[in-house]
Amino acid sequence: MGDFFVKLAYKTESSKTHFTFIRFLENILVNHHSKQKKIFDFFMIFLVFSTVGILIYEVKHEVPIEIVYYEYFAVAIFILEWLGRYTLSFSSHTQIIKDFEASQYLNMDYNFKDSLKTILKKKLEFIFSPSSIIDLLAILPTFRPLRILRILLLLRLLKILTYTNSINQFIRVFAEKKLELTLLFTLYCLIVFFAATVIYVFESNGVNKNINTYFDAIYWAFVTLATIGYGDITPQTEIGRVMVYVLIIAGLAAAAFFTAIVTSAMTHKLEHIKTNKTLSTIRRHKQYTLVCGYGRTSKILVQNLVKNGHKAVVIESNGKLCEDGEKDGIEILKGDSSDIELLEEIGIMNNVSNIVILHNDDTINLSVILSIRSINKKIEIISRCNSTKSKNKLLIAGANEIIRLNDSASLVALGYLKNPIAYEAIDDILTDHKGAIINEIEIFKNSYFIGKTLNNILFDRFNITFIGICHNEDKNNLIFNPNKNETVIKEKDFLIVIGYEKTIHEFKLYLQAPHKIKGIV
Image (spheres, rainbow, N blue to C red):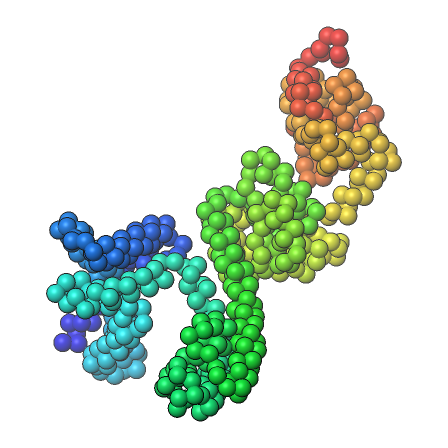
């Protein structure tokens, strides 16, 4: 028999139909990132509320046969859902394969009974789990002859917890604060017991006509401690009234303690829920730029990317900076940009087109590059370099391009000393005052200016500010504000200029003309 089940297990493991079916169940039942699960959850919530609504309706009305059939349909879905969760609860064929291969490795005979025991144990654990019991009890009231069980139908409302991840997050708050809440509940019970005992001893036996049993005393103590005070039982003796004072003070203290525990846990959990929601949104983006670290440079970069129709997401670990980013309208995620799991979650393999790392610390930048390269070897990484000594390390770690912001600032300062107009134009771009844009213009092979010096070009005629030139043989080296009388223009050189959209367009036509343009050249 064991050989039969081993063969069946291997056949199941290699079956594409089985794999597709299990993947389908996972996507609608357990995969919170799946679109199918969200649709299924809404559908199940509708079934739960509609069947509970039928229970309320039939209290005073005769239920039509169509509604009865609808309830049978809903219960059939509940049963299929339970069977799906039962199937996913434990993989029987995987356990058989695992045990069989272990016995082969140890050169022992395979005992199918051991695998069967493990499988039965795991399946029974699922059947008797709280969520499974709730599901089964919610199905049971469908048998209409057992009218007394109809009240159990209200348990279907608890099924909603299965379909609402956010509510589950809040419920976990109480699980995480189990110790504190247990201590508070124990103290609460002791106070109720003490107060009930005192009031029962001093006010029973005819002293207080409303306290005849110990249960009456417990009821009074509980209601008073909760600071509700219905007034149906009031103490008649001085010792009883003193107990009221004690209970009110204790009740306020217990309520404050409980509120502090829950508020503290809720604040942490809300942040977690917010992060998950942001992650869910980011995962839907396709081909976006990931920016690691948030500051003034990141803000300008992201806002310009978005302005030009690109998607950009920022990862920042500092909570205050994350708040600033949200106020600036930046899509920002609080987290460690060197966290490999986080990088995988946001889709660095498929969804991210390129990465810009802008932390102020080169050690952090290096760590982020190494983490990214451990996942994706091909993605383009542009990293900020804060120290000249770190440049080679960042390149060796895997950065494609290095940005030295301090060097850039020095060039701008130099530009101001040599050419104040260019500096003002750059400032206009960065501050977005006048709408000027920066552009690079390639020199085509037919251009009239090939072989001539830069001073032959009439930049002022088109209100164009010249920034620098990149020669074809060294495109990565920008020559900032070169000597126009000595710099010769070559084919496929790039001129970096600042101007307005219309004038740049006209300047391109002028620059690429194969002959002199009358009245201009």
